[in-house]
Length: 152
Image (spheres, rainbow, N blue to C red):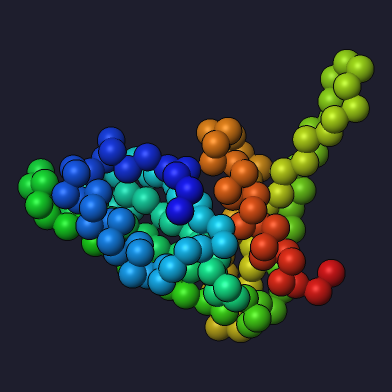
């Protein structure tokens, strides 16, 4: 898996390993694309991280929550949901185009998509905001894979 989110600042080494093992079990093998978001939790049960991946025809999303104590051996809570991409009913696409200034003709195009499933659940992948330059390509790959699964 590519590294696009740092785990070290919010969790201890044993907790980091617990998250890695939990993700490996949920993903089930090498993902086609993988992206993580670090949150700023303040209390027990609040999200520490959200991870999204695609493996084969399945989009997975896992949330890791704050265990709420200072015990480095207390495992953070983790839950995951796997959704078949073949069942996506529609994808809403938002586009943010930055008009270049000066003489350059390079337009910056950033996408935000929301995939909808029959059970009314949805997943939002938003690359329109500011983020670390190393993280953006991973998120853009996820978006491209979701869009590739939809007849356009």
